[in-house]
Structure formats: C-alpha cells, structure tokens
Image 1 (cartoon, rainbow, N blue to C red):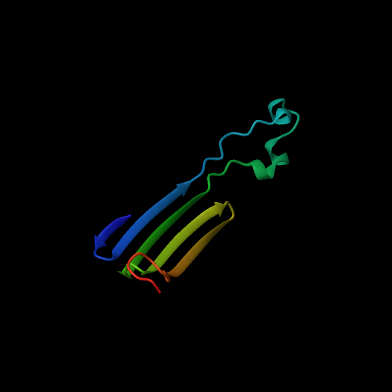
Image 2 (cartoon, rainbow, N blue to C red):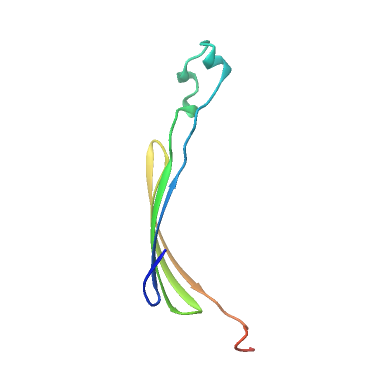
Amino acid sequence: MYQFAPGWRAGLRPDRLSSGSTRIGLLDEGLLTADAFPSLVAYNPRRTSLMVDYSPSEFSRLRLQIARDQARPDANDNQVYLQYIMSLGAHAAHNF
C-alpha cells in the first residue's frame, strides 16, 4: 500500500503457491506413470492484484481492484471489483 495523495492509496499484491513435490509409492516403485494421476501434475498457481481507493471522509471509501487469477492451468480469470464502504451509527464524537 502506498498513499500518494491525501485520501488516495494504491497497492499491489502478488500471490504465489508452489505445488512442491508429490510422493506416491506406486510412482516411486515404477508400477504406475505420472499420466495415471493428471490432477497431481506440478503447477504453480498465482494471482496478481492491483487496487486503488479514495476516501472522501473517514466514514466512506471507494475502492477499485483488478486481479489476474491463474489458479487453474487451463484458464486465466480476469477479475474487476468495485466496492463502496460506508460507516453508519454512533461513535465517540456523536450520539444518535
């Protein structure tokens, strides 16, 4: 997160996951090949998100986030979020 002007912030978030190594006795012994387990093929999913938000007051915030999700090896998912956050109710400065 970086606040580049009063009320304005931007942020970048990279997510990575390593699939590690799978150890299956039948594979290690040579009785089966890796083709018998297609869901265990090594894949390193990742997602990168970029966001910017604006806070016109301490009670509200408008936020835009764009993300590219590569969680599946066969497809990429581009996501756009638009969010409005608002606080209502009693607090220390006022009793309603």
